[in-house]
Length: 351
Length: 111
Image 1 (cartoon, rainbow over the protein chains, first blue to last red):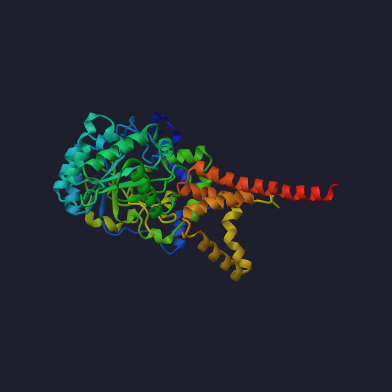
Image 2: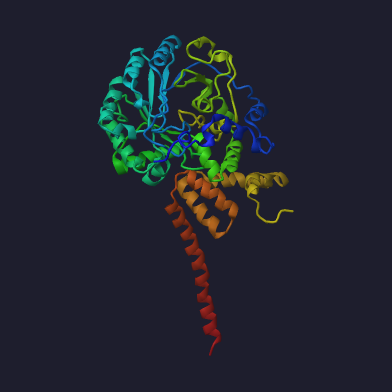
């Protein structure tokens, strides 16, 4: 199994090195406009927060997979995880802020030792939408996780699962050998407890991201292809497909540089800049929290260590009523969320 | 002057042909977009036809555009290569079928 950038002591493991790449080169020479200039030119600067609606909590970077495109640089060799104290503080925040969506991510969030306790506590607070971003394979990794689909169903969790493609070759190339067949097994287990079944109220959404240096196609069309193929070949049902653009950071950035696609990919993102997508980018209503309790405008900023542009950067002192008072921190990776139909953790942003 | 007739970046400037003849250029792009919208054929099928034709007319811009379009649509490499072979077969066949003309003329003119 491949190792994380951190385990390989790759220079890109340092967020400063990634930011330097994104700030310099074609963006410094003026060949491509910086994201801030593009916003200004489109009359959309500064990008402002609206209302806090989504609390995205990263429980830690440990994962059973080492995906080639992972923006978290997650893997079995990453041990970072949120402490119980910070989990409890997150619960207080959820209570005070009355957010409608709590989005649990990682790594594989299920691998956090307090995962089940935390989900129960969040559910007890009456949160409308509790999202667990599952890589699927963890659900069939060993006997310990076999009961998780049932647990998800009991807590009314909204499962959002990564499945880069509905065929083996592309999925395994991006996520590792055997991932596709394990993912199919996990999807069947989720279907068996009611996920994706009409009338069950148990939402199962899939996430597609391109297996390479290109943009995703229209979400609606790909969703149809996924639905037809998974139903015909495996009898699998799901609700929605979210298309997510790969952002040029972390391991995907490593791939772009190694394959000499970086400049062309950035040009593609810049050329596809869509002002309509800017209105709905997730940083306008989301607060991302890392395993140490620090706050970011999104999960990507978290991985680049760009904290919220506020005097208060930690959940310990955070007052949710101040959410919209500070500007959103941006860099060139933001082009990933505004290209074409736009991209977010909930998929495309415009039709 | 650049040393190649073809410049990859020219593909992105394609829309600029409208600058020197707005009416005709705009008509072309309107027609082009209508052609590629889903109709009796799906947009996916049209993309594969476009890829095959791109090879037949040996247009590097078109090959660039429709390889990327195919990747985005989740079209697999086996499908793309079969489309290219369809183009190659038609082009090869088109060459070869003229052989019948040659044969006919040869026979007509020969004693």
